[in-house]
Amino acid sequence: MNWTEVNIYTTTVGIDILCARLMDLGIKGFVINDPNDFNAFLQDKEGHWDYIDEDLMKLSESETSVTVYIQENSQGAEMLAALKSEIKRLTESDEKGEFGRLDISMSSVREEDWANNWKQYFKPLKIGNNLLIKPSWEEYENIDNRLVLEIDPASSFGTGQHNTTRLCMELMEDVVKYGDKILDLGCGSGILSIAGVLLGAESVVAVDIEENSINTTIENFKKNNISSDKYNVYCGNIIVDKEIAEEIGTGFDLITANIVADVLIAMSELFKMFLKQNGTLIVSGIIEGRKDEVIDAITNAGFSLIDYKEKDDWIAARFILN
Image 1: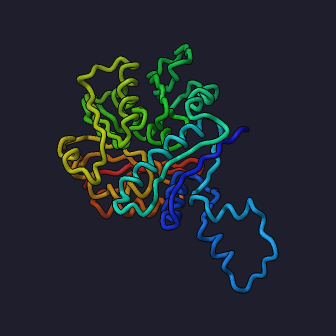
Image 2: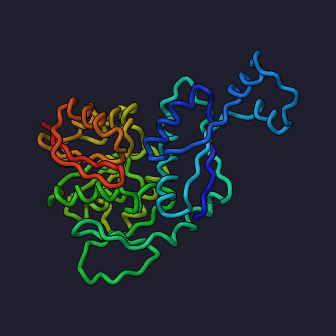
Image 3: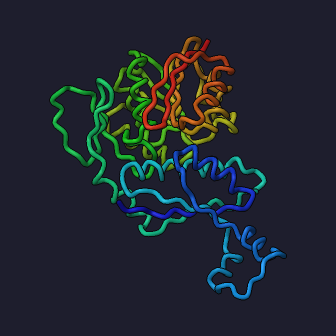
């Protein structure tokens, strides 16, 4: 298995929150390079250093960074897309600039090659009882008459390969009804939005903070021959942008939000603003260790937990607005 080194440049102040966000994405190991730690080591009055290697001394002048290693496969591509979206959210929340530039660099593979390298691992995938996810470059003979969702995620999160997406779609199968209005928050590639329409929804509104995700979502709607009068897309952050929140509207039958724990908690009081009474909320992207925290935040906001699914330490949950 090949790995790609991903470096995220931050500050000493930003290390803890950045590492917490990475853990919420399921990244459990990282390397921290903080010059302040090394300088503290050099200034240790109890140490007696006869010689310090020149390359080691360069650490004192390097930029603070957090490094992670991501597999070069379909899961890795999903992880990288989610990581980029999460870094953008963190950047937008950093009003004082305390977390540094939060730029990302990758080594061992050019970023423009990444999306093509992992395609060899992305094959048609059956989801639940009715859906089938098909990469746009793959052929598939639909002998069991499934609803075929054709997807090209480009560099956006959402191929159906990741457990968070699969669990969310399995929960959607049980609740989407003909004529429903769906709001997809953090739409990524648009996979959940398109699944909702294929399952019978009348219309869908897709929202993401990444312009690239919005463009990819529109392209994927077109790939699935979904009429433009069935969807609207918005680029922005509903947590801080009240104008977008108002423009999105209300009265939705279902909200899907496949993001991360911290963002779901931050949105918990906003969900009910968009839903109709007794509407359904499906959230995903939650690691096992933060399940109770997310569920408590959403139930405290006026929702009842109806069901949840878990797979390989990932959780997706379904709620009803009381």
